[in-house]
Image (cartoon, rainbow over all chains, first blue to last red; front, side, top):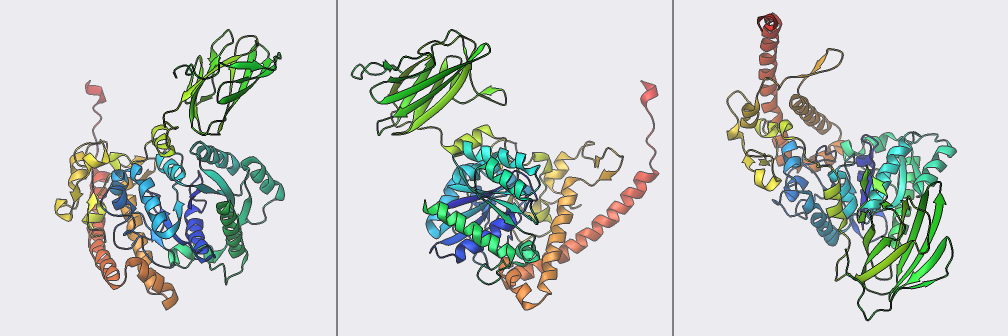
Length: 229
Length: 290
């Protein structure tokens, strides 16, 4: 399965959720190993480290599998240079992601914000997408635009994650669910979750059992059941 | 446009004559249509089901007495539409649902359908659609700064567009630290330096540093944050060391920060000197000489 974690707006926590979902899906009993691909070519967020990265892969200088780093979360990181972003050929992304999927099993693609080609191509490659949005009622318009783009690119919406959603009005939650036509999971504000990318310590859904961990477990459940269909 | 159906196939047969809905069949297609007049416009909806296991190229032509007003996106007719109708590929055992408006009174049947084998043709792959229809992702050439190479980042080589702004492959070349000029600017920046390469002035008169400078500062700040995490407890430092690639990565980080400290001092000195000079400079008003 290739799952795109998308959302038209920047700063809503796509990378943090993608990172933690990678760990949570990996820990689930699917038997698949999970790789998180940081596909934010211009503004990568996930740890880079040394060695080839997605910029190198998309420039044809590295094999995607050799660019995967083992760690707390298995990552195919993305370079940070604008020159690398400019040299990246998005037409190589499909082959790269599918190669990683064949080698490992499941891929979570952290998509960039916006509605340009770098946001669209991961959706075109993915089997399904998870839409991340803030719980602000005004965010629904942006979410609908992203869902439309995913639809046009034959990428089904598997779930909506309302991030940093504390005390969400049930009416707002229902509106998101009704308008977007997919199950909505509210992920509450959580300090461990917020720090996880920086510290390299994803939320452990087996142990932590806090509200954020429960939300991640619920997302895993929804994604796995959709994948089984 | 697709060719007419082969002679061996049955001719279209219309059923259920009705003023506002009906069905048509061909050898392998079942077509249901529905019309609804709204003010001076007729809304037509058509559902085509392919009963064959192979894809068919289907052409739905409008039979009403006016051009089709097709669905539009951003003012442009959607893919496959023209003023006579729409052409699509319907997968084996797949269905196609389309609708359009027409400034003509309803008639029965409102459409004519032709189909032909799709000859293996399928709709454009989604990746091609995304690349063709969405805006280019690449950052503009003007923001390309090879600061990492100049300041000794962990990456070995970074491709930089040096010759033209065409395809990435054509424009890529490995830029190394040897390309840096003595004053710390890359050849790319030096080539492009012009009076317009100035700071961005905000509406309120304040000015922000150029994007390249902000990007560099942010990168240094991120490396400093990483270094700070290494000073924390074992639980916090271990994954950071792993993400850096172990001991060699940590050494590279230390070397990078040492180099950057020197570069930052040099930039600070140069910036102070230039700011003093800029404040003391009085640009003459040459408007009156014209």
